[in-house]
Length: 457
Length: 182
Image (cartoon, rainbow over all chains, first blue to last red; front, top):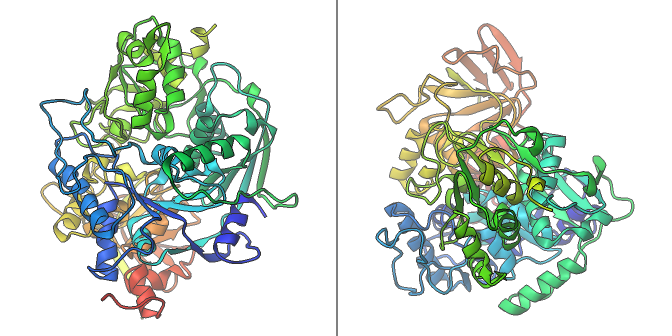
């Protein structure tokens, strides 16, 4: 069996499963957020009754992150609905924006978006938070009401996105009926050269198989090249499995996985038992291709979908108006460090926005010093407009007052985020080019799409 | 029970993602609240670029669409997992989408909510059929008839009774899989 088949067999209490089998799986973690949480809660109450209790209060993780730092009253209300539900159900893992469990969240427009407006429990983007707060464990099954839930597959876990109705069903029963996907195997050899990141790997692969090349399928990443990838790089790769239509993306487990997970579950006091899975030697896959990571180059997905693959060095004629670094895909600490390495001591030429994925990333950027200066200050000195409020921000547009949102037609934006269909970052007549944080940084310096290796020695 | 749907069609191309079906800034609406459900319908397909789609899916000043069937190319509903997408279409009055292929989560959400019938068509129809053409969808024979031609669609199979019942929960109750709400 493949990694996905092994996990689904275990979760459904069967000795083995085959692609196409429909199985009821027991859920280890259900994650929801402020955009789909209120609707999921609505389904749960409508279907199981207003006094119903969730199946396991330690397995439900609620992470407000999408529309938080906005004056939009309905978005603020949605965070309050999550809080009320977390209190009523006694949920252990609710990463609230404010500290007062009886309070109401209202964004203070007078303070603005630059300075911190969150309390001690807040974390930020859900997928990054699941990892940092010790909710990702090898061999487990995780569902989330967000398509990028597949990111958790970096930790040798089956993870996929679902809608409110399925999530409401899980809240009440702890189970979900799913079809076992066929597996596509991506076998990695070599190590990434300087200036090339996890983002380039996944943009290359999506270009290879097409924007729907993995529809209904599992993307399995294995081979000797895996060990050279950091956990951050692996998260970037699995995060975008959905951009090829994938049901899930999943890595094999190694010492790096175990070190990361053990440290996180210990630091947060979350469940610390788990059992990784390995692929069988006779596993059956429907696609099998080897990729030499050392041959990859900085890659860009052009407007209007993530499958429009080009090399950054071929696109020097595309003039840009804006650059953006942030999100689950491109707003991690390592992403900002790669960005800062390129812009350090220089000035950006176009409007450039930076949004840390989580509060931990924010703290890292302020604490990490290069030649006595914090990375945060290095970015600010280069002219990057930063917010201290981590979250999804303009990756998915959001309310009109969202930090970094593209509100003007015709804008061309290069972004470290994950999706570039029309309207994704705001205006439906804007264009988004997806690239690695290093490529976004180099392009911000020149005002056109630029290979970051021009700035790295 | 014999079932057919006859309606004007709205035609779109490949890769219509969930942002084009329901733009992200409307996700502050909660689908289980009836007024907000209706509002979601009024914004259905509001994210389509105007230059490519000059005909409004929901006419100005109205909350429903005159197009009960959508004809699409490949990968309809790709992108986010937002259930607001099939819900917005259903709330606007769409009963079926006939596409060359669907993104997985959109397909699943269409079935789970029972909002619409997602039919796969082996033949690409989005070039030959025009917005405003009248079509009849025969759910019992899995065919679409438009402009005098009848096309065989891929049968819905096990998912049809779930949508007929009005979604996952209604189906599960009807078939005795789960108990009634308290």
